[in-house]
Length: 166
Length: 281
Image 1: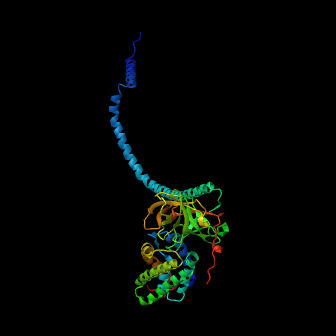
Image 2: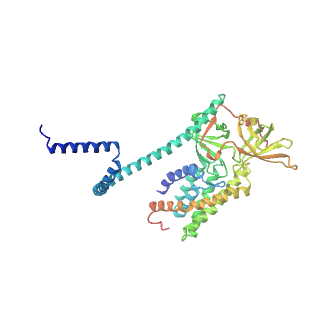
Image 3: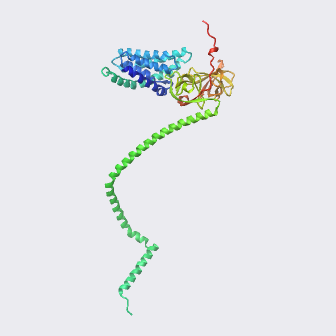
């Protein structure tokens, strides 16, 4: 069920990301709704099907981004792995785990982006990238984290009503 | 002779008095007298009328309030409907203005063939500045085609699908464009940045670059047609210790609020790949 839900929800999220959330900018940073959805779902669903969410999100991003296609698979895979690990460590405080996943996940994602861009010959200053893109993106991700988490929790409650307690 | 009766004299006297009073009234001499005499009656009439109206309203107003509420609700709905129509029409007017401007631009340059498209999205990565348009290879759009608006250069097509295309903006950090300064008559290289700024590099030290100079595509390298406006210089940095000057350029196109674009479809970028000698292991 959750695997089936992944496709429409993440495709819709990807479309919203491109049309709406990419335009909501703080300096040059923007929120990543796909990352937020993955973080929230990874914390709420400990089944293997959560990986389908990561693969679907990565596939959508790989189809649209000019970055090499493996980059979204690596970044979103790491975010999902991080969410599943932290869910086991902080199972009593899902919000703390959520913000930790988003903080570390955003830094990892942007670090990989910067690295890949440098390797492909696009010179972005690390200091400029951090101050103008990464930290503003962190703020926006943190702002949207709670609403996205509540939506995903309601969705998870519909899919797995007997297991979601958060 | 029979004398007239006293009654007929009385009648004649009364008639004379009446005629006299009427004559005085018509002439206006009795107006103040009438006014003073009528004012108590008018006051009484007003008093009665006010009370009568109050009684009348007491019985009729409840029905009018209900009718007025219905009318108010109907008018409110009508106002809301008209306001939404105004918003839609304003949006259509804005779109029409943009399209008319693009049409004027295309008419002014009949040597080029254009495909107009709407911007439907932006790239997921905040480090890169790309937009997506709603036309693709089915409409004749190919990789590398320049993208413009009526104000100037937007970028070039980076990837194409059947019904959509991805456009690399000139402000993307991976974008490099060979340009020329219109007034200084020198060639330089324009590069983008993550922050959306355009940096003009490789300007010779002896070139006289001033704020406000227009930056145009030079056509060198074959990636863009020549003489498309890109923007104007807003600041110049010249150091004696540097080999070249650098300058900051303000794009002519508002790339943050891009709505509609034109793809120049009859321009084929030059592909130098076959000319690059293979590297020997």
